[in-house]
Length: 331
Image 1 (spheres, one colour):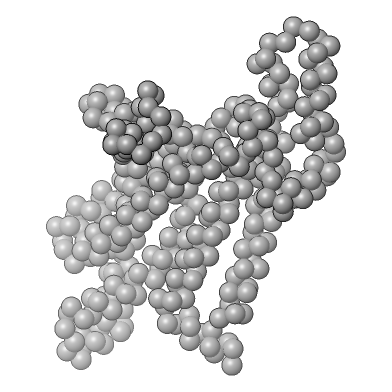
Image 2: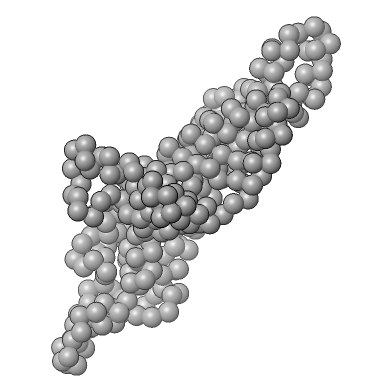
């Protein structure tokens, strides 16, 4: 166990280092100057004052230093838990902006990922044994899983938000409200949350249903299923074993698809102007906020790596073959 997870942690650390380095480089490869953009919005008329402010902010943010020095400073600050100050929302720390957006993103991601995985696997398992469900779910599943997150979000916002007027088409809560633990705010929050959640849920649902349906059929036609049936085992018992074995690739698929779902959630937040990490990334790009962009990317990378590691742990617990292989390797 220690060797297995030790190797996993080592791989995750290498992945973290490479991903964070790329995320640090991306904002600096963008065209434009973030300090000049920030000062341009201030509409300064005095050229001398504008030049002095430019030099002051450039020095304060460390952007006047060579790139290699900026890179070392970034890692030094990161090891101290400092993500810097936002250029766009100066002088607000990047950590405060991210912590304000994280609850909205998690409120979308966790329910959509968990519910789509469970519901999709349930429908897929029943579709493998029901011709009517198979003829209904399979075509619908292919349509949903091939649908881009952004396109479905736009379709739902237009149809259910603008045309039908059933749900708000943009925002996280009513503009006249302030976050508070009141029924008025909670009901407004849920009504704004539903359409972004639905778009993420439906796209992921189709993929899980198709995957489980195909895996169940594969397992039912495997040698051990035929052997159990030849011994006179009840059909229900054979299906139970098939379902358990089919769940293992679905757990692996959850780890593989996690990054795609997170990317889809970021795009969905942008479509609905939902105040999560995706909307924060859009604001950082539009305002050329290096520190906010790299800090948001950093948080997403850490979240995806932690979630994948948890899935690795779960996989070891549910698959006895992995444990047997680990014991054999230890011997």
